[in-house]
Amino acid sequence: MTTPEMDELHDELRDVARRLLAAGAPDWGRLAEVGWTGLEVPEDLGGAGVGFAEVAVVAEELGRALAAAPYLGSVVLGVGALTLAEPDPERDALLAAVASGTTRVAVALPGDGGDPPAFRLAGGRLEGEAAWVPDVAGADRLLVPAAGEDGAPVLVAVAPGAAGLAVTPVPILDATRDLATVTARGVAVEDGAAWAFAGGPAVLHRRAALAVAADGLGVAGAMLDATVAYAKVRVQFGRPIGSFQAVKHACADMLVQLSASRALVAEAAAALDAGDEGAGVAVAMAKAHAGTMAVEVAGAALQLHGGIGYTWESGVHAHLKRAMADRSLYGSPRAHRARLAARHRTATV
Image (tube, rainbow, N blue to C red; front, side, top):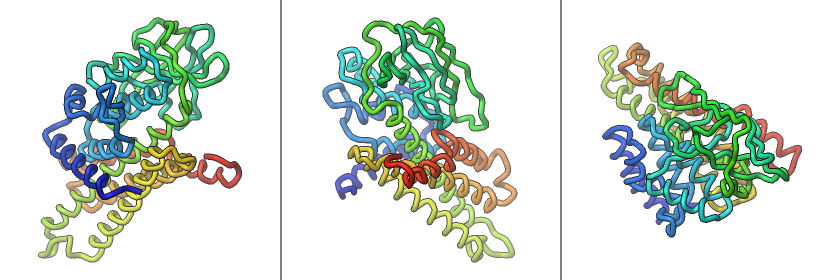
């Protein structure tokens, strides 16, 4: 449950983000300047000390603007991983550096919905591979969730150019995403560069899935607004197409689906912030619904724009590509529905 004060905070954050992103996609320095890199970082380390709900607001606006910013990899995953790691002077210093914008991180968490961990730390060496990892290019440090010597989850920090570490770019149709495959073959881990990892990569995977769901909200919201605006000015048979009942119904259906996803994302974000045991269920519901919804809304927008919707200049195609990428990253709707169905056979999701 949100409070009026939190709703007001989110509205202000959304307004600032929308105005900032209207001027163009921000670089890492600009993200730090406006405080987005340190939203969840404790205040004593230079952050704002707020929760994931605020991060989700920014993620939604980045999706609306189709911003190609390293927010998913460096903030949603990077800051999230570091805050889950055991407090340590080196960890604290890295977290403060990310909040200030002097350091960028990426997290080698598989983005294909596979069960983590994908890496193992044994004898001071790191082994494993993760596909569809976001925002590795340009990162100063790579954080790797792994199974430690005793099988317990650890978070390992390595240099992107370390011997035995390979980063292979993965091209996709969505040009706004930067994805790569990270492969570790006997990468040496320095002393003090591995920390106990509370909750393990599974918790981090929930954060990523929900952030991508929020991104889909932004994509769908932009497409609904553009479609309504177009329907008001496109004239056919002597009248705006927005006056046709079929177009009205299509836009109304888009709004209903978007509103349902927004409620699910807000509920899941609140559950994550509260540490609820049912957070996994809430995230799976949000990702399953939002992943499908964003593609359907963008597809409907493409159709309602008519022939112009298929042109490069309209931009509708770019939103559809981003929505399709969001649908697949960190678990497809089908995979999350399977996880929800599993709760009838097991105690947890």
